[in-house]
Image (cartoon, rainbow, N blue to C red; front, side, top):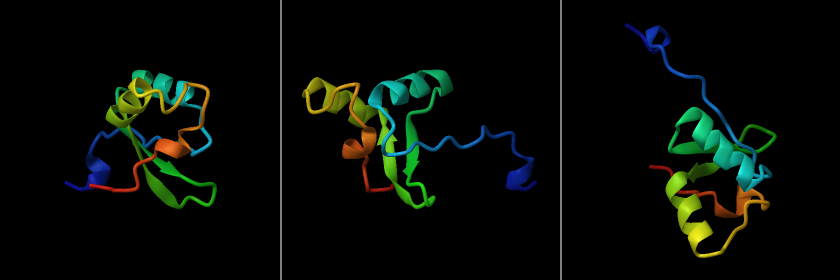
Length: 77
């Protein structure tokens, strides 16, 4: 068996300019806990996690109309 044989969902990447409200809708739609974020040249910038979104919203550090780029985690685990 190879990776190609697995029935995995297609990767969904976000752009750092994506509004947070749109990212929240994508979390709900796809059921993912995190999304990779890449720039227009397809360079990986980091990940956006549900946990970080929740923390930043609760601390009023971001609004749903702002771009996600300011809360992307650059540490990949």
